[in-house]
Picture 1 (spheres, rainbow, N blue to C red):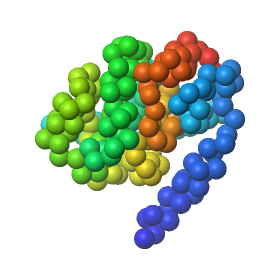
Picture 2 (spheres, helix red, strand yellow):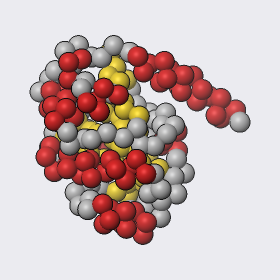
Picture 3 (cartoon, rainbow, N blue to C red):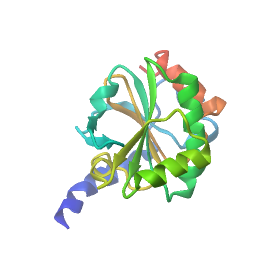
Length: 186
């Protein structure tokens, strides 16, 4: 019980931060589904967290340093995740490369066969699969509902967060991410 109480201040900060003023120069880009995005006034350090790949090898976010990252927490049983995942796949196809990556982390119990079936049913072909079976990464990152997407800058700091599903392949989402990658809001 006390472990959960330690997370209460983080949870409250995230909730009250939902009305934070967006980073300079990006307010006008928060259109469509991106209206739900909370951009922080200043980048926030992220905890040193670990997760695994499908083979069970431990991974860290440090592997993505130098890239803007759309870090998405999801689950096979999550209906909004099912709606959102194809757009994350399309976003990775459009922007993925040296400067940008979509990183999907299956939070909780998501057996690999169920993940493979989920990706096959939704036509997802370009996203990596990472696992957080005990939800330790999710808890450390302040994820309390699925889907949740965290934007990371090239230094691995959190610059924004969106709770709930979104169309990540939309003109608004791609425009916001391109602006960030081109230095807006810095």
